[in-house]
Amino acid sequence: LILVNPGVAQLSSNAFQALRDGATRFGDSAGMTQRFFILLLVLLSASASAAPAGTSVAPDFVTLVKQEGATVVNISTTRTVRDSDIESEIPEGAPDDEFNEYFRRFGPPGPREYQAHSLGSGFIISEDGYILTNAHVVTEMDQPTVKLLDKREFKAKVVGVDQRTDVALIKIDAKGLPKVTIGDPAKLEVGEWVAAIGSPFGFENSVTAGIVSAKGRLLPDESYVPFIQTDVAVNPGNSGGPLFNLRGEVVGINSMIYSGSGGYMGLSFATPIDVAVKVAGELRAHGRVIRGRLGIRIQELTADLAASFGLKGTAGALVAMVEKGSPAEKAGILIGDVILKVDGKPIESSSTLPQIIAATAPGNTIKLEIWRRGAVKELTATIGEVPLEASRAAPEPEEKRANRLGLVVSELTRAQREALEIAGGVLVRAVSGPALKAGVQQGDVIVAVNDTKVERIADFNRLVGKLPPGSSVALLILRRGVLLYVPVRLPN
Image (cartoon, rainbow, N blue to C red; front, top):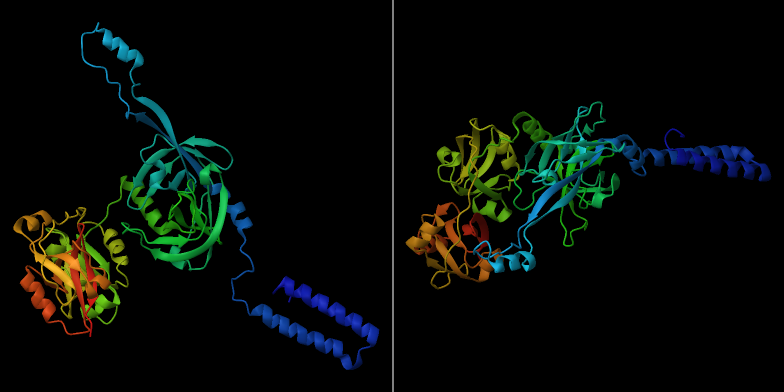
């Protein structure tokens, strides 16, 4: 029992002492003390063994910090800033003009130079001095200085940075350094204890702790990083520091917070360490990260959208845009296709597709299983590397009469279509009813209904007129240069 739970053993010992004292004072007939103590042991043993294996009463952060604290470093950077907001304006004239001397003595000062300082954190991943941190800690800065726990300082070389994942690899000239143990973020559980070590506001080697709030969190304009969300207190200066699990393994790099004040407000995000390690390997080998691309824009497949396309589940990635001349267009991918599998691997969520494509080397071919017009098709695509570009916004249209979706739409002129770089579509002038409830906005350009393109108002009205009452329809709209599907449910 002592081996199972020392606290229970102490309780049992106290209970036995009380029973023995009672037996001595009042006598022990028929071995009642022994029987009661055996029953107590059985109950306490069952209670002790009911706790799940591997759990503890309290997380042991003390041991974690003692073992891993020396692997965390403080990074300070400086940048020479030239203040050119106020320029000296000396009028042109002869060199001996008396006004020139006046402006030199009493005119506004010329440009000034000063040093801007930045603080961050990092952690050692190899004994010979390679360190991981955030790209924004070292970007556009002079040579960073790395300070170890033992107070030694080194000038660091920036090996490479990757802005898309906010990961940077730097190197110091040192040997025999303590290094972190790399963990597996896939094994991380929501609700699991984690800890951050870093230099918030310059307070070196500060430790904060919390739990994993969510996994695979995609943030706006972030397609390549499935962030680990935690409630660990992270503040300016923590950037680039490690996120540890209780086994002392690094599972992420603390990268950003959501805040209305500039400080911690309960939401912090870490880049999974497997993503960062892969990026670091490419930075070390090539100095940059080479990513594959298809040339599409996708969105999450909601239940209403899935129903509009005749799908029973929400697994897959809905294609909302195909770039002209892209690998996707050459492969035959169309707007409204739902990508279900890549090389036989199911796409459970749209967030997984960009990571799979990005991890595929340019020039390689992949097999895509897609859902189109109620049937499964297979396509083959050759991965490219050119980035996407956004379209431009739409001009104001003339007003028309509302339809059964609650939309007032108008034709696009030839000039408008050319400005938007689209072949056709109708522009939303006003919104009410089901469309307003679904989130359609004034100024949206509707370019397709479900997977059928819309060229003119007549096309749009014909497609909408065929919709049965109570059904859902997916409107593909262009909004501020971005294509996305909006599901609208018609009233019964």
